[in-house]
Amino acid sequence: MLGPLAAARLPFHASDRGVYIGQAFIDAHQLLLQDQTTSMEQNVSAADIRKHLGELSDFAAVTALLALAGLSVVDVGCGPGHVARELCGIGATVLCVEPDPVQAAKNRLASAVPGLSFTEARAEALPVESGSVDGVFFFRSLHHVPIDQMDAALAEAARVLKPASGFLCVVEPAMTGTYFPVMRPYNDETKVRTHAQAALKRSAGAIFADAEFFEYVQRPSYDSFASLVTRVTGQTFNNINREHVETDEVRALFNAGKVADNRYVFEQPLLLNLYRHPRHQI
Image 1: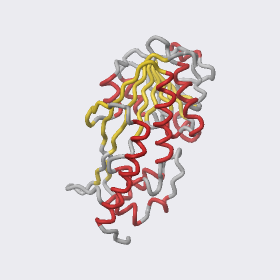
Image 2: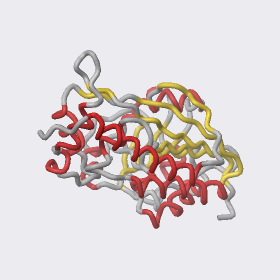
Image 3: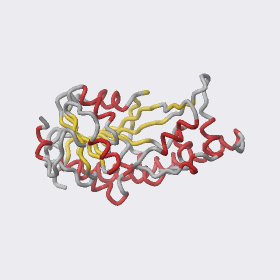
Image 4: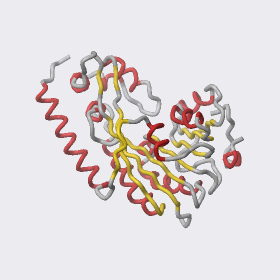
């Protein structure tokens, strides 16, 4: 059923797996963040010429670039596997790899989907035979790999890909737009996101013969501040305390996203790097 994934080095089974802050402060705060993060991103991606794909879901973005029906792929750092399920729906076979033991346990209890398998493993030690899969995806997960293991994770992705046709697709959140300033006070990912982009430039650029760079945008929305708090404090891969989110600073930044229908909408640009033809001398 799973083709090359069935011979994985590790076993897996299809069933597994208050105080007012003025608008001037908000504007100045966002301008400072934009200056800092744009500078950081330019340091690691100035040579990347990105094609803008528009406003898309992750699934729509990757299927606009790749014909995935009939392919066997690995989703590294899959979380609950939302995109993986969509990929299976168009005929792909997906092995979802999740390092967080809490989420991995939930995945093992999830309803079965044809072509979908879950396993608990780390990005730098994929339970997959060398040269056996068509593609590897990282959806917002590379920056969650320990910094000193990011290069190893990219090399590991190359190891499992078919030499002639394999691809690596990495989607990382940009540090621009209006969403990052909201989350930065309680979950500042500036360092890890910067290191992820640097690892891609340093390692993936050397490992793969061909690369293309894209960007698309998503607009996260909430019906209330409480819904944001519930979402971010419910993620088991991040240890975010409620008291760090329920602050006047975060609330003011969140309120700046209010739109006409009393919802709160933000802009999150996504950076998509697509690599092909791995060099297997690594």
